[in-house]
Image (cartoon, rainbow over all chains, first blue to last red; front, side, top):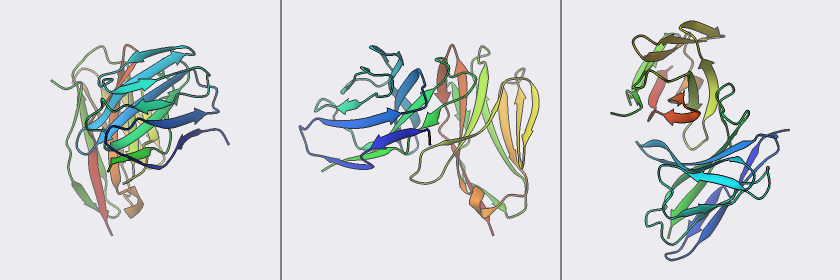
Length: 115
Length: 109
C-alpha cells in the first residue's frame, strides 16, 4: 500500500541532544513538508521541499534542519538549539508540487518529548 | 489577522443531528479549500476539498464555499459518535497551505 511512514512513533530527547525524525513516502510525490502541532495552535510549517536537493524554511525553522537527498525521504533533525521541542510532528507529501489539487497526505506522526 | 480562523469549540450535537463547522479566511487570493478530520492523538485525514463557489456533497458531508464572504463551511448530516474529532480547515494561496486551529466536535449518543 502507498503511504507515508513516520518513525519512531514516540521519541524522548534529553537536554542538549539532537534527534532525527524519519519520514518516508512511496507515493511518488514531489513535495514533502514538516509540521509541528501544539495544543491550541494548529499546524505550523517547519520546512518544505518541492524537489530533491532543495528545501525552504517555513514559519518556525529555527532549531531544526532537514535534508532531501532522495525523493522518498525527508528526515527532520531537531537540534539542541530548539529550546521547546515537545510537540507532535507531522510529515506530509503532495502531488503535484503545489498540492493545490489533491491536498496533503499525512504520516501518522511522531510525538517528541523532552525528558 | 490570521490567514484562517475557526471557532475552537467545543461543538456538541446529538446523534443524528446536523453538525455545522465554519471557517473564514483573510486573503481573497485563496484558491483551494480543504477540510481535514483529526482524531485525538492521530494525524489529519482529508475528507473534503472544494474550489468553486457553491456546495459539494460527498456522502454525509457537504462543503460550502462563499468566496465573496470569504468563508467555507462543512456540514455533517446524520452525525455519528464516530464523527467526534477535531476538524481542520485549510486554505491554499500561492501554493502554500494555511491551517486553522481546528474545531472540536463531540457527537452525543
